[in-house]
Amino acid sequence: MSIDLSGRVAIVTGAGGGLGRAHALLLAKRGARVVVNDLGGSRDGSGGGNAMAEAVVEEIRAAGGEAFANGASVTDVDQVEAMVAEAVERWGRVDILVNNAGILRDRTFAKLDLADFRAVVEVHLMGSINCTKAVWEQMRSQGYGRIMMTTSSSGLWGNFGQSHYGAAKLGLVGAMKTLSEEGAKYDIRVNCLAPSAATRMTADIMDEAELAALAPEAVSPAMLVLVSEQAPNGMILCAGAGSFECAHITMTQGAYIGTGEDAAERLLASLDRIADRTDEMVPHTGLEQPRFELARAMAQTEAAPANG
Image (spheres, rainbow, N blue to C red):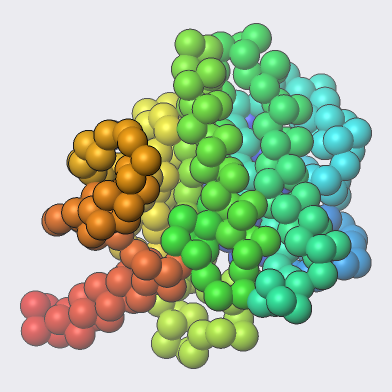
């Protein structure tokens, strides 16, 4: 089953480097015309410029594809709407939106300024919502759309020093779950990708072997599936180091406690039984997803000579 995006128009935010660049290049390679959006700022969101986006556009054009650069900030609704309008004016439609733009300002909650909390939520969560809102009516009217949100293991399972980032990333899962329902009758499919990738966002916390294994290009095939014509709907797909998993927000069988003045005490006494997740694999922190993926990738690498 080949994934052919010929004739499709895609917007990728944060596409000037790392995951976004890998996504944009793969979409173009499969035939899509691509809007390469990037503010051009540093990883904390400061600064800006079109050089990074233009460089990716040149890569796409050099390979025979079609693309143009756009420097809109995903936090600016007017700029986002203008970006979508330009894509429709040039190419007549927008079929794919890959919400990838993000910033990092990691700090423990005790040391975190609320302005930084708001900034991270504004870019990751509201930035994705701004872009999604800007393409939604276009996709509804054409009866087709594929939207990908970029969530994170930090949002799904938590990570020290990332309360703001985790809040935004899990918020995207909640938005995705509802939008996948609302868009279904218009063939708008909405999914989340939880990547484990070595980018400038993670360059300070990984060694060379991990950086090599977690190349962004190893994640982009998952993106391609989530925006393809055959895409699922409402899925949280995890990807890293060539390993792929699905994440689920689950509920246990629990127990009936009933009511009454001592219900809280009986509930407290039954919490172990209620929380039993027999046979489930549920990471306790966001780091367990990349650790699992890295262990599998390293095991495959070590086994390769013996199997060769």
